[in-house]
Length: 312
Image (cartoon, rainbow, N blue to C red; front, side):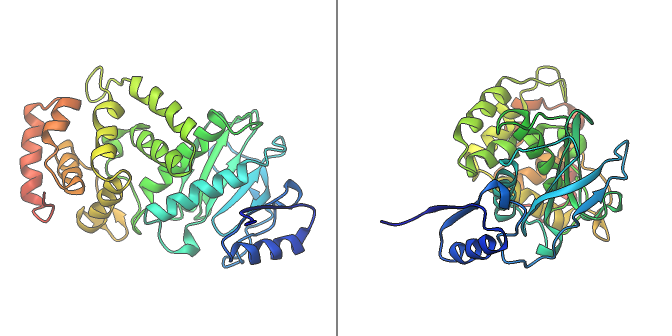
């Protein structure tokens, strides 16, 4: 008999050491809830602070560290209890993310996942470039509930994690395409792909159905961003790799000031860079999805002249 999944309960630091040793031999190891605060990954990174006082926006909670490894650090406010599923879920999400997208050196790419109960509805991200959150990649989400691994409890943190990706990949800060896809069209691509990559097929199907039916009023009324743009890109151009290539092309060729993007993209530049990532001219797809007014054609023509290194 071959063991593949092992749970270690009530072993504290001994359990963590055993878990690390078993993991090196390819076994899937999870500590029981009482041991989730231990580091399973060998301690390549220093331990996060046991407490973290919020000092951004209206947030004033003194957060406590409940679980950590070299990939994620999970923090709860005083009203958030239980929810042991959060640590393995966020670990799996962020490991898939780091394996897919270039999130920079390990010392900077840990994700700090903050969970509030009955306060701060919605969520926000931050990145290791930002002093506002002590130069940490952050998903900060409320108001819960966090009792089960379903619905908003997973969609909220994964959404904010996707914003970290778009704003801190390839060693460059910012998201030049954000004014184009706004909040939250790129997230639909990111979440759908990530859930599939994590083996969460039911949740991926749930999002697929919801996103396919969703319409937006930008750039024109009745736009189906996922159905007519992001899903065809995912389906026909290498799944996540089309966005991996897009972000890489931006980091190499879009204007920067140091390690910050110096301006946003226009529509013509967006379609040009996305065409480079897909390896084919996406003007026809963009026309179907978004329309193609005269100013967009002018922008597209100029972008091809300004960025001739983007080829397809």
